[in-house]
Amino acid sequence: MKFSCDRAALVAAIGNVSRAVSSKSSLPALEGILLRADDGELTLSGYNLELGIWTVLTANIAEPGSVVLGAKFFGDICRRLPGDMVTVEVDEKSVATIKSGKAEFSLIGIPGEEFPELPSLREGNHFTIERELLRSMIRQTLFAVGVGEVRPIWTGTLFEMKENRIRLVSVDGYRLALREEAVRGGNEGNFIVPGKTLGELEKFLVEGEEDVQLVAGKKHVLFEIGDYTIISRLIEGEFVDYASAIPQTEKTVVKARVAELIESVERASVLISERLRSPIRLAVRDDGIRVSCITAQGKVFDEVSFLEKTGEDVEICFNNKYLLDALRAVESDEVRLTFSGNVAPLKVQPVEGDSFIFVVVPVAPKGR
Image (cartoon, rainbow, N blue to C red; front, side):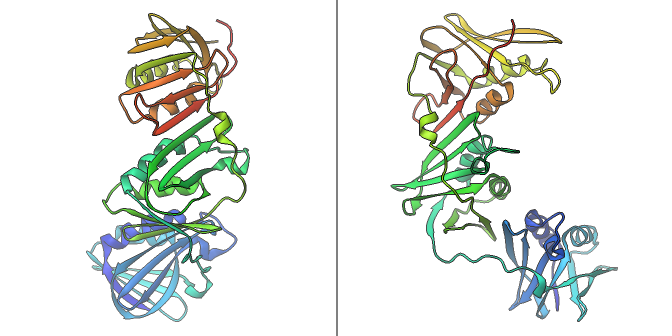
C-alpha cells in the first residue's frame, strides 16, 4: 500500500475520525484508524462498536491496500510533519513509513483485515434537515440527557417523526427538553440516539452549509454531513411518557429577559459548591423576581424585573445548574416562564410559539 495526499486535509480527517476511536479496548484495532487506499481515494474510518465515523480524501494511490494505524501516534506524527504533502508506504508486515519534507517516521500497524466491519444502512427512514437547524435542536435538548447511573433509556434523545415534523426529546428524571421543527421527507416513526453520539455529531455541524441526510434503521442511525458519514447504534427500548411530565395548568405566567435572569442566577450561585449545596429560591412578586440562596458560607439576595406577570405570587426552589442549563438553552432574548404552583415543575417556553419546551423539577427548600 502506498499513497500521498495533502497533509492538512489528512490531519483534519484524522482528528475528526478519531472521535469514534476507542481510547482503550481489548481489540487493538479499535484503538486505531483504518486507512483504505483504492481507486484514487483514501478512506479513513474510526469505530468503537457503538459509533463509527468515516470520510474519503482525494489522494494519489500508487499501490492500493489497507492498514490500521494507532490514532494518537499517527495523528501526532502527521501534525508535526514539515511539508505540505505526506507519503505513506506500508510493507507486507503492516509497518508504515511516513514521509514529508525531510522527515521520516516508521510506525507499526495492524493488517486492515483485523478492523471490524462497520454496520451498513441502506434501508430505513430517510429525511433531510438543515445543518444549523439540527445543531440548534441538539443544543437545546442535549443538556437534559441523563448521565451516570440512570435508566439506560434516559441516556439518549428521542427522535419522533410525524407529518413531516421532527421532535427531539430528552429527559433525566429532573428535567425535560423538547424541540420541534419541520423536515423534508421521512415517514412516521421514532428512535433513540445516544447522547454521546449527539455530542460528537454537534461538533460536525459547526461549519458548512450542506444539509444533513439522515437514515434511521431498526438498530442504527446514519448521518451524512458533507464529506463525513457518522453511524451509531440506537438505544433499544420504550421511551418514557414524556407528555405526562409537561405541566398543563397555569397559575403564574411571567415574561422576562433571558440574559438578566441568567446573570442573576449566576450571581446567586457564587456561594454554591460541591461541598456547599443549596437550592436557588425564586420568589415571584408583583414588583419583580427575587432571587436568593443561603449556604453555610453566607447569603445572597438579588432581584430581576420582568416584562409582564399574570396570576398569583409564587415562591419555589430549583437546583441552580438545572435552572441555568434551561435558561442558557433558550435561543431568544425573552422567555415565558409558567408556574403551576409552589411545588410543581417550571415550564420554560418562547414568548411566541411552541418550538421548544423545557421543564425543570423543583427541589425542597432549605432554611431561610
